[in-house]
Image (tube, rainbow, N blue to C red; front, side, top):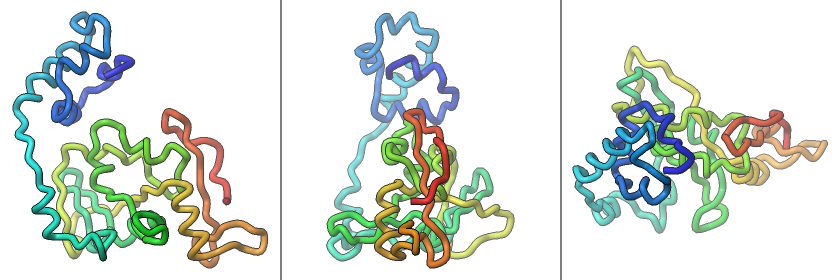
Length: 215
């Protein structure tokens, strides 16, 4: 809503996503002379669609499918398919490359749910990576599946390209690698028994800095 960021948005799916939680008043409060902005038609589109959404809660229904006191992560198995782009992510590979320790217990293994990151509309994933990322991370994929049709299957169908996908914060992933694999003879953290963990800083604009560098 600020810095005329809406001027850069051309994807109608993104505008629809914004309309689920913002309206004309939101932009009017954060901008002088909003009616004179060159992107005012986008603001009006958001405002019009804001009234069409039916807000529902699935909290109690969702609880029936999870045992959060015992299970801190969903099973990452099978393949996440993008039926729109004919792409696929092997979920077990995603999980192993994105694992970190945290949660209710400091030693709980878990990973960021890749679906919200892949389909986001507002750039919020960058907040999870403010300190940097694992060098294996594919943070540029954030938001790239917005508006696409997704499906999870047990086995990979013909005609799909399996892509690398990893979302891992620098320090949470660092802690996991240190606890699981320890240090080499030079005091550097290992990511596997024979490889070093590499991480990389991000600028405030989400651009990768110098690196990758072993931790």
